[in-house]
Length: 339
Ligand code: BYC
Image (cartoon, rainbow, N blue to C red; front, side, top):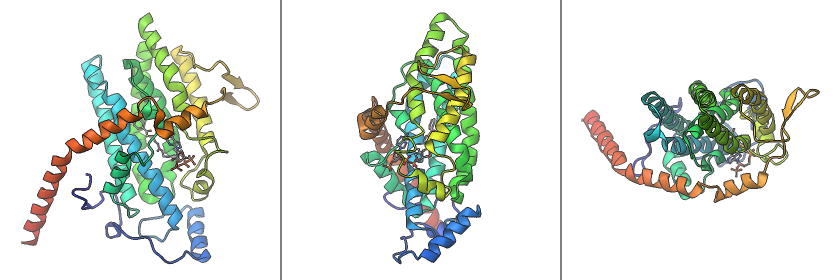
């Protein structure tokens, strides 16, 4: 649940309820503290909310987890766009469930971020003001039903590749939240592939629609993994802290190697004339990524950036009465308990 009237609710996913809103220690970090912390990380111990941690570790996690949460919430929009137009009752029911799952993922992740002493209301405000990042991929439009298939197959496929290693993240609450999220993402990926398979085996027009969706979603999915390793400012430190277990380029390559044969199975063509199997490397090699497009989307100039934020702002405003009602209910329960 979102914060209500600026007052925090207890986080749902934490072992450190008394840590909420904790101010980071003002004392400078000693080299001994940092070394002890790194030794714990190196020994694969989980770092928990009550444990000492470097301030930069806390801030890195708040940034990544909240960005991840925002991505799940904004990610509901492109697919939500097709719920009323799903081609059958079964497809509609499955799509509603998937979009609800994504809302749930956002909630777990906001709760995990709250264990680091940040208020959910603050994070939501950062999203709504445009200050926070969310995944570039959700700034592209869903033009046809095949886009719902392509998102499940490619976007959720990329998400699984990126997120399964986060189940081993050094920060306990984030790692634990990812376990269930990954199970659900796996179902999402399969439902997307099944939509693509149905279209690819359907009429000429359906196959063309599937190919068109692949053409539009392939490169944005490749970019989802983030900047190349040479341009990634956080990867080296996040790998040392075992927040990340693989670099952006390593995960991107794994995704390409898994996904190209799936496209071949579907009988669809990856929109990259330079794509080739590199026998010596044992990998598929792709053509150049358009990093200018990626940076433009991050700066707010993707096809749907404005629309996505407007939709979130409208949703947040429309939910005001729910937050007020929940706060009134909580206050009543607290008063009853105190009486
Ligand atoms: N889009 O140093 P880097 C989902 C930013 S939800 C936008 O490599 P890092 C789903 C990055 O934040 C998918 N921004 O950063 C939901 C950093 O910005 P600042 C979301 C991006 O953190 C619904 C700067 O670029 N998944 O799957 O080491 C339906 C430099 O990058 C992007 C997650 O969030 C991007 N694509 O690595 C279906 C997973 N990439 O703050 C599916 C968790 C990078 O320094 N996150 N940036 O200005 C991660 O694994 C990592 O944060 C990233 C980036 C791999 C994304």
